[in-house]
Each structure stands twice: as C-alpha cells, then as structure tokens.
Image (spheres, rainbow, N blue to C red):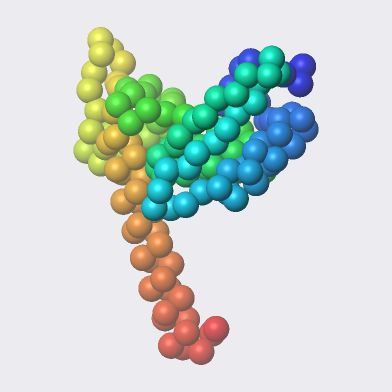
Length: 154
C-alpha cells in the first residue's frame, strides 16, 4: 500500500509514515492548545501560501484524539451520532457477536427500527447503551475492589 493512501483507517492500520506524521502534528497541536481559548494554527503550503486556521477547544481536542489513534498505530472508524447502523456495525462497535446484539435488541435493551426486513440502530442509542454498560461494569469492578480491600486480599 502506498504511503500516501487516500482511504481511511477503518479497515487498515496507519503506515509508518502516517504514524510519524501524526505524532509530529500531535506534538505541535498539544504545545498550542489552551483549554479555555481557541487554538490558532498557521499552515504553510508547498506553493508558499500561508493560511491561518482557528480551532475551537472542542475541535482541537477531537483532532488531537484522532492524532493519538493514528500516532499509536491504531485504526479507527468515525461514526456520526445521527447515523443508523446495521446490526453487524453495531455488534462490531460493542465488540459482541451479531446474534448477541440481536438478543439485546429483542429484549428492549437497545431501541431499533425496521427498514424492510432489516433492523437499524441509531448510533446515539447504541452510544447511550455502551456508556451505561461501561458505567455498570466500572461500578461492579469498583465494588469488587472495595470488597477485596475489606477482606485484605489487596
């Protein structure tokens, strides 16, 4: 695969050149971010043209998160909150099997709609389910750690 591929990272890992470029840009961005103010970047193009770009704090941190994924060599997929996902896409996002996801849908744990014979899950509903699932897991782990500490296992 060429170093300057135009495809995204949803089906592949970043190349070494992409990892290095993302790490360089991540360091530049981190040095200029102020959590309470917009971040101004001056970009120089090969033709000698200059452009100033202003990033709001939320945009700067989102961009920084993407650069962290690429610079660590990880692939990723961006899912818009308003997207409707297939059952396979939703299962992949939760890291569960498709049959397990269908059981969650049929039990009412995650809302869905039918498009013809196919189920569709709104990304916002899937994200809400995942956030609640992760919160419950964290609470359970914290409770187990507390019990272990009380019993002297830790």
